[in-house]
Amino acid sequence: MEPMRRLSGPVPAKQKRGEFVWSIPLNDKPMADWIQVFRGAGERGGIINPQRVAFRDAELSFESAEAHVASWVRHIDKWITTANDAAALAEEKRWEDRLRESKKVEDQAQQLRDADKYRDL
Image (tube, rainbow, N blue to C red; front, side, top):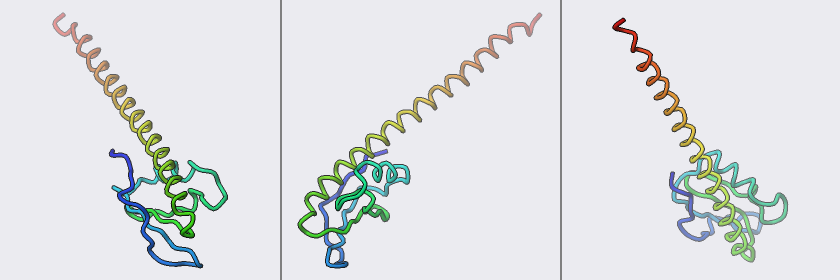
């Protein structure tokens, strides 16, 4: 799986309650477990908070006054990195588990072939 990344900076999508809703395109649609890690990566509460980021298809969005956008982007980049690192570790673990299971099946098949030595007795 290719790591998630921003394709551009934030674009104002609409104005809501005196703030803009900013939209950032991503290179792919994030998976649910990736989003969960992303949302758990930052501090809860406060103005800049991963819980306030919405995902739709291959895009994320957040509400913010223009004065806070640069700070939002810095935090979003950190949260993306955290989620990508967790996804890479999970993928590595799945690969190791598949490899271990494959080796186990192969070893069992070899034991069966080895035990077949009595066929001609």
